[in-house]
Length: 286
Image (cartoon, rainbow, N blue to C red):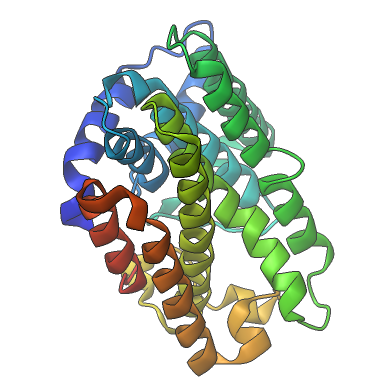
């Protein structure tokens, strides 16, 4: 997984590091950069670039969109870690944003990253920027990531039902793994059929990713994960293994991975790197 992502991640890290965050007071800029530049897989941004190339185009013009998706992801993690949400004190092996900067500044840093992401996209002269913008906004919004987060928070401690967990995972994770694919394909000039194939791929990829994440919370190595494990079970979170058990959850992750790979068939060899990444995600240890 690391080998596939490295060249894209390197470009993205350079771009993110150079963003001036113009107008932000120094403390706000520091808090935003703390979470934005704290590492991570850069999966969402890399998928944007890879999908643009899968459509047959150069991915340079997709960099602002890739960066914006990483900003949105960073904002979601800052807010997710807050005491009012998951109350986590460790993220990627470092103290979470609110531990370092305080709750008020962490909220502002998350707000700043979200709004700056849209400012960055809006400044793009790309002829298909507006449509790609819509894909990203819907995925991050009330019918996507926020819908999943709402269900996750409000149904904590209730009896786990697979239909509910599917809805949580579709919103909380799959939406923001689908948008990079569809946005990248749109920017790359893909056909409507290819965009819809990318949408199906992203949904199945996101479901597999979150099921594996649920499993790693039970069986992962804390040193590799860089965060506190076992909290999902302790806090009564609605997870896939809680519904179907660990053995079936592993089978379901494999099934969603196969479905994701099947959705890429129309791209032929152009999807070779994304296929490799998809298989590697199923085997990831962090």
